[in-house]
Length: 185
Ligand code: GNR
Ligand code: NI
Image (cartoon, rainbow, N blue to C red; front, side, top):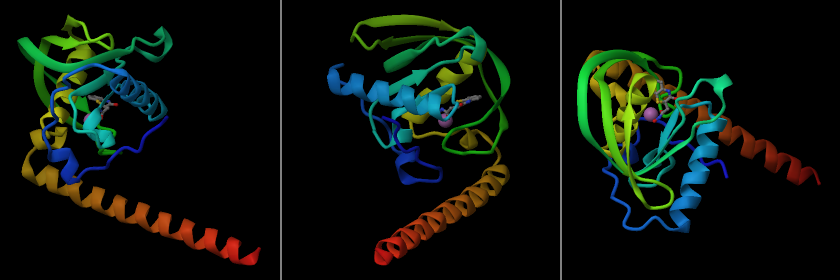
């Protein structure tokens, strides 16, 4: 099931996610819904707080389109080592239409639980390194615009508030039309 993605700014996106104490069927259902939501939105990753769930759960697929899916499930992820720095132009499904340069570690080593609940380690470079740091940020209540100057962040905040107001108006219009059709019956 595709879930609704929360748009920034929103208090939920500032909350710290709790560690998962057992990878059970409910967590696996969440992982499946998040993967479906990520692919539907054409994203390379998704963190549970973006769908309103404050648990340490992430899905990532940083493989190029043509190469087929390389879906990763990460529960309770921890960065255990980093190397170097690199700048990458980032976007976020919670901040649609925006893209800005962010400096992060060039390579990271991550320890997490898989969808079977078993711990594993992952060496990440390139887009995967950027994505994994971006997603772990979401679990800490941080989004990529928090890494920008306050001027850039406030410009983006204004655009997102406008976008949210337009979306709310569209939804109100839909309700109006639906009730009009109903009364015509
Ligand atoms: O889809 C996404 N693309 C992306 C591009 C560059 C750096 C990070 C990302 S993550 C983003 C999906 C998302 O918002 N995950 O939280
Ligand atoms: Ni994001």
